Image (cartoon, rainbow, N blue to C red; front, side):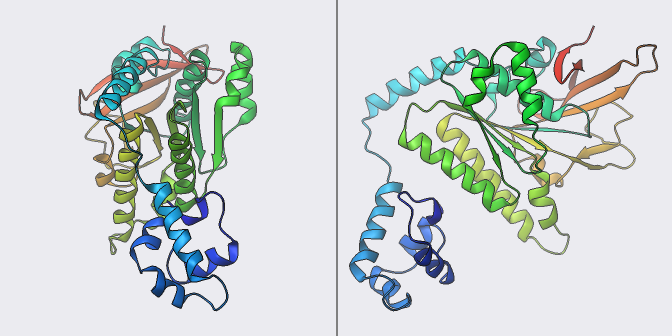
Length: 327
């Protein structure tokens, strides 16, 4: 946990001084130095030794796991599994839901495809259907590009008669990796503070701009950051029984994508081959223009990789931003 996320907030002057010493997280504070050594390194008169000790004690208490009896934990997990089965995540398009076996079975699911293929529309439909169908539920949407359209979402929910559900959709702008981590830490804090907080789904739209600038053929630092982040994301999802939808853009595949069953697929998910194995499955969306009088557009969803089944696909359509079955 970042120290700037500690509640009640710490003074900015103290946080700045700690960051100058390379202390930004709870782990840095608790394991870098003992209280006396840390106090000596801080600016004079900025904090007393007793205040350093109290700070370390408070941070340790906030991060400590609460005591839990085994039989109580088993009962709660059993009830949570039953509830999880009753409020599973679906798109509402039967062929698409059958293709992946329901989106709630995954911890971390990658949705990739070219522009206008329906990536954001699919994730949005999954989240909005869940919020509309499950009272007191909530979801987190992390927008890393600034393209989230509140007007579009409002229109969809108004047509569906479920405007109340929008109050339970938390949308956060986060253009850098540290900001994304801050949003996730806030969600984790809410889940720890209120065990009944019903955050069931988190969407990152999109993950590509967070890591593409960091990846390089001459340095492994970017790949290391990406791998660490994705592993922590999985741990977070497993700890709180969440489904995390990761939207990823594309890069060129020459002459074609060997993982696709379609010969015309000349694109592949971005962020390199290592990212493929950091998620439970990769769902690839394509948009195919069809020469017809009504200018109908065919969308195709294909499972490129999954621990259950790969190389399966189904068609669908998008009408006014809503996914519908293909007829």
